[in-house]
Length: 193
Image 1: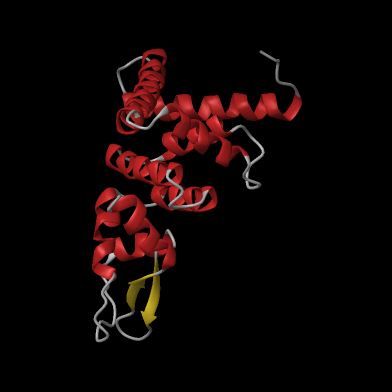
Image 2: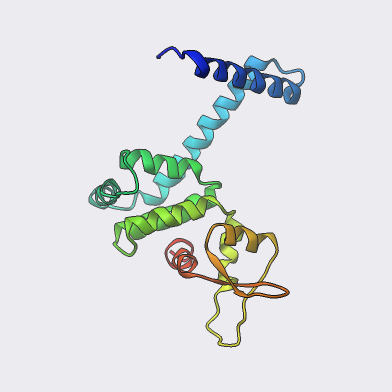
């Protein structure tokens, strides 16, 4: 491993000191070394569980379909890194196991050319910003009834709006929201599958 020099070394030393102090405060009687090891083990286990869930939900795809998605992601101009690294990052940053199921639906729909690799990336990033229950509530914001003026459900709406899945339809009091194109794609290709 390359030795850090100058400002980076000081920054990392300070960061380690802050983390150690924080961990000691939280952990109390547990030695810092053990606490750090527990946190590292937890991260590895969490990532392993997410990868396992992703594998279980996509193992029915033929190898050629997996290769096709990897090639599509590799061809994307949005990223300069390898597609496998991108996919690993998307899996790792996905919040819950239930959201991994939705990510798998998006992945499969990319393999079947129902969505582009660009839409897969957009929807995967939006998926990282919401809890599963908020994403499932997205269906409440879509209604074909011409008299439907929109919906507002507190923090769930705020989360969906921040993720870019709904738009402000009625401005006033209260502000009401409807599903936008990205949200409709999330419903069609992620949630409904």
